[in-house]
Amino acid sequence: VDKDKLELKEFLIDYNKSQAESILKSLAQLQKQIDANIIPLRLASYPDYWECRYCQFKEICSMIDEGEVSWENFKKKIESQNK
Image 1 (cartoon, one colour):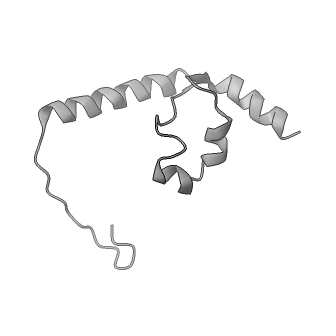
Image 2 (cartoon, one colour):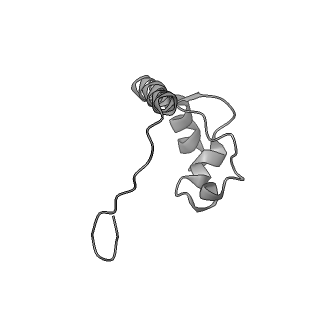
């Protein structure tokens, strides 16, 4: 969406079946983690990935240890640091 004109812009891409299946598999795994209240792994390139520098969750992401974390345990960690 063009934020100035509120118009949609289309990008045509070549369909790649294996890439599409890989993306769908990753999204299905992410959905399972969300349903199980597990915070997914952060990006492997964190914090050097350029988008990490501008992310609104950068501070929260830095608090997560390596690996998956249950939401309840992480919530307790956040609350204990805010006291």
